[in-house]
Image 1 (cartoon, rainbow, N blue to C red):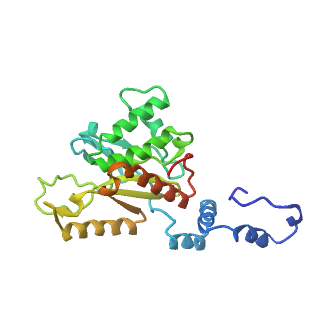
Image 2 (tube, rainbow, N blue to C red):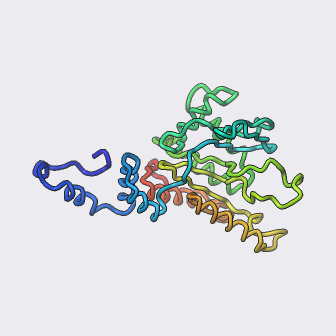
Length: 286
C-alpha cells in the first residue's frame, strides 16, 4: 500500500506474494507503473529497475542540486567560486539584480509553497503572510521577463498558485543560469564557449526530473528578419546537450502564445505534462 498498490484480501494471506503483486501491476498504465517504480528505487537498490526507468527517460538528472541563480532583472551578476571543494558560489557584485536559492531540495523538487516560504525570509519588504508573499514573489519573478509570450506562459501558470491546492505545484522558475561565463559578449574576444547560459524557465519535479521550457522569438532563428540556419543549428545543438544530460526540453513558438489562445495552450501543456508525472492540477485547469 505504501508503494501505491491496492490492499490485500483475506484469502490472499497465504498465497504467492509474486501473484499478489502481479495481479495489481497488470492493470496499470505505463505512467502508473513508472510512479510505482520510482517509489521502489527510492527505497531499495534495484539496478535492473533503474535501467528500465532510464530506457523510458524517467530517471531525471544525475548530480545533486547545488545552486539556483535566477530571475535576473538587471546587470549580469559577478560570481566567484569561493570553495571549489564544496562547490560554494558567492555573488560578489550585482547581487541585487538576481535571486539565489540555496536551500536543500525536499524530494529533489521545488514547489511554490517552498519557494514562497524562502521568499518570506528573503524579501526586503518582509511580507508577513503567505498570500502577500506569493503576490510579491510573482511580481519580482515577472520583472525578469522581457518577451510578452514569456509573460503569458508565466502568469498563466503562476495564477494556479492561488487556486485550492495550487501551492503544492512545482514552482515555475524564470531565467535560470545553467552555465556561467564571467565575461560579457563585449569583453570576450573569441566566441562564447557557453552558447546558452540561461534557461527561460525551469521546473524541478520530484525524483530529479528537471523540465526546461523555452519560448522562441525571432531572435532564436533569424537575423534582421532573415532565417539563420546557424542560429537554428546552435539552438538545437544546445537542446541535445540538455537532453543527454537528463533534462526534458520543451519549446514554445512565441506566436502560439500571442493573443487569446496563449493561456489555453499553456494550460493544456501543463495538464498533459503533469499527467505524465502523476501530479494533480487544481480543478478546471485546461
